[in-house]
Image (tube, rainbow, N blue to C red):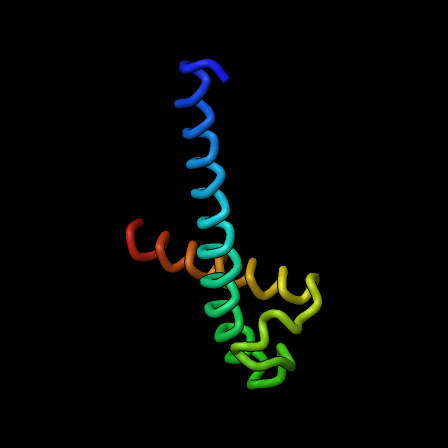
Length: 83
């Protein structure tokens, strides 16, 4: 390994760690919690059929819908607040 290659490799690992953190923290966690609350409110407590902390038990299509709804809600609220 060359000396100039070392900083590039470290930068690559740092970017990979930040990407993982953004994916897990923002999309999965925040998206699920906000989306779950929105879904439960709009469906009067019927959807999703799992609890707030049962994120790992949900099938991936349902989880994707709930997380996208959560992120969409946050985006719409931010747009409305700052537009």
